[in-house]
Image (cartoon, rainbow, N blue to C red):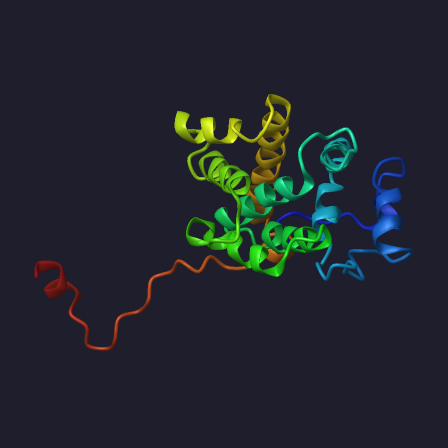
Amino acid sequence: MPRLRQVSRADADERTVLPLYDFLFGDRDPVAEPGTATGTPGDWWTVFALVPDVFDHCVRGFGLYRSPKRRLDPLLRELGQTRAGWLTSSQFVYSQHCKSCRGLGMPEEKIAAIQHWEVAECFDARERAVLAYTDYLVDQHGRVPDAVFAALRDHLSDEEILELTYITGLYFMHAVMTKALRLEFDDRDDPMVEVPAPDGFDAERFARD
């Protein structure tokens, strides 16, 4: 379950939230009857609806990255978003954007290889530059070496780089938030736990040795 309460249809803001509820859930109450067309529970929407202007800001961000005004190739955009989901261990962002890659016609070989692009041979030089830049944006929090940035500039304009940086950073944020709030496919326990020792294990002796 999400860590924050969800907003039912009856309590949803009529101006900003309810139109999206209608679009995504039809006439269902998404709290009482969860589920979206892509198979997610849909609780990203019902939790973000707690603060209507934040909800509206996020929805406008989705429209911005899909706008026909964007200069960045949508396939490169999705490489950044999907890789950001993988690097942050957000199953929600990673899973949703694998689907977006597929919807744009990206071959299955490439979608599967986003996880291990460094050793994959299916990406061209432009795609590899985008993936390398994404790794430094997300894993190194923007600490991008000059050589990586120079490789990106060999393939993208300044405007395209700004769009890539903004959109990838936006989805880095969404990946972090869905994990923190346990939304959608990120509602799962952390797998990093101590494995119990067998019966009879001598912890003091282990520490000494």
